[in-house]
Length: 371
Image (tube, rainbow, N blue to C red; front, side, top):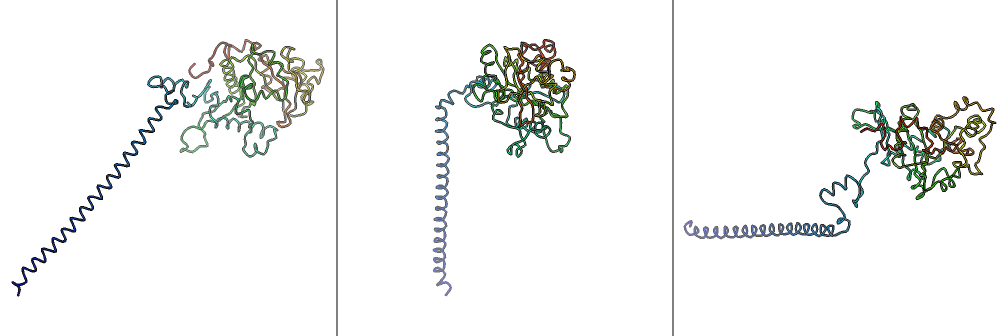
C-alpha cells in the first residue's frame, strides 16, 4: 500500500513546492518592480527640483537688479560704504562721543526713537504739566509727525541694570537725554519747521538763504537724575559735532519757561526783551494771534541777577553762547509753557567755547571714542 502511493505523494509534494516557489518568485518580481518604479519617481522629483532651481537662477542672473550688484572686492567695498548696492544696507551706529558709561549718538532704529519718546513723555507729561492726548496717555510716549523726519540725538547710559536678573544677557541701554533736530533741506521737502506754527520765521529764512543753512532744535530734555554738567555737556558735544558735520549756519527753535501765566515770568521775559532781543536783520515776531508782549517791566526795573536765576538752565546756556530771542512770547496750552524763540547764528557763538567743544572747522568731536 505504501509503495503504491509513495510515488504519487512525492509527485504531489513536488508540484506543491513548484507552485509555492512560483508564487514566491512572482511576488519577488512584483516587489522589485514596485521598488524600481518608486525609485524612478523619486529620481524624477529630484530632476524636476534641479530644473526649477536652474531656471530660477538663470532668471535672477538676467535681471537688472542682479546685474547691478558688484562682484568680488567691489562687493565688499559696496557693503562697507553702503553706496551703489541695489539692496538696503543697515546704517552703522553713529556715536559722537563717550564719557564714562554715557555716550552721545544718533538714533538709528525705531526702538531708539521710541525710547526718546518715552523719555519726553516722562519729563513733559509726568514731571511737568503737559496735557497728553488719549493716544499719548495709552502709549506713554510723546510723539508727533515730525518724529519721522527729524534726527534724534540721544544720550545713552550703557551701564548694567542692577535690577536685571542674571539671565538677562546683554546690557540694556537707557536713553537719559535727547534733542530733536531738523535740517532746512529736510524741512523744505517734508513738513516745514515746527517753529513756524508759533513764529513767523519764513521771511528770515528766505532773506538769509542760500548763504545760511538753518536747523531747528526742539524737544530737548534730560532725565532728572542725570541733570548735571557731564550729561548736558555730552549732549552739546554731540549737537556741535552734528552741526559741523552738516555745515549748519543758524540754529533756531523754541525754548520754554514753565507755566502759562506770563506775569509770573515778568522779570525773566523783560530781561530777555531788553538784553537779548535779536537785531532787526535777525528778528522774527510771534504770529499776531499768539503774540504775548515780553517787555512787561521797564528796563530800569529789571534786576539781572534775579532774572538770570529765574531763567531755565537751557535758555541761560543759549544766552552764554551768544543767542538772540525773537519778538514776543507764545503760550503753549498743551505743554503748559511760555515759549520764546531762540536764534543762534554759528558766527555769533562766543569763541571761548571753541576751546572746549572744538573749532567750527573741526569735523570730529573732541570726546569721540577714537579721538
